[in-house]
Image (tube, rainbow, N blue to C red; front, top):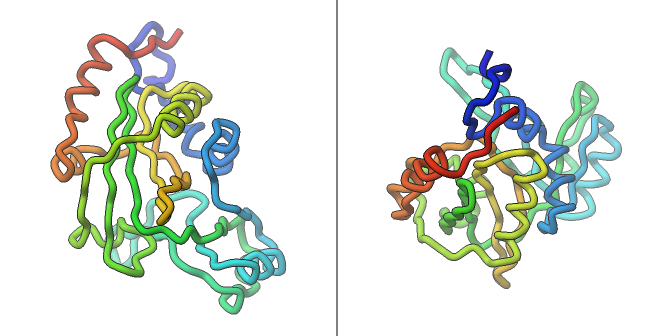
Amino acid sequence: MLGALPGCLYVSHPQAIARAEYKPAQLDVATRAGLTVPATLITNDPVEAEAFCAEQPSIYKPLHAGAYDIGGEPAGIWAAPVGPGEIDGAVAGSAHLFQARVPKVADVRVVVAGDQVFSARITAPPGVVDWRAEYQSLAYEPVTCPDGIHEALARFLADFGLRFGAFDFAVTADDAWWFLECNPNGQWAWLQAAAGLPITNAIADLLANGASHHD
């Protein structure tokens, strides 16, 4: 019903969000938009997966973050290191996403609402690969999104027909920003409070003045 309503204001249209949640498409669009993307392998071939993980430090991450329970409690799969010795025949059961591990010193979450961009540097305890697993131990600092990244994000959103996106980057010691993924319908309220970013105002501005109508 929501996707069929004519002349409505969407942030963003449900079909655009669904398309943008597909990670292989994200990686392709991010590369074409000019973002730096870690080497990535999507496969169900254990031999390919083992060879990839032997070439460089690697991580495993869900190809699709479907909801599931463990013992009746909601659970999730965090990005985690994986070595060639951990690959076995179970990989053949479905497609998996393996990625070169970025030697990061911090993460950055970038929230784009219309033409407004907000960035926060996220510092986790040493050795933490996926900061979402350590919410209680994170430090936040507002930072400026580099012009080149800003422009690439605009191209990324335009390609998918989005007006909002929550982007995750890994940042290395030389201040290189590596694209990890985009949540086209990502949470942002906690980041506003933690880093002092006026994201609510930007979304209100977008809803009032700047969102695109869907024909």
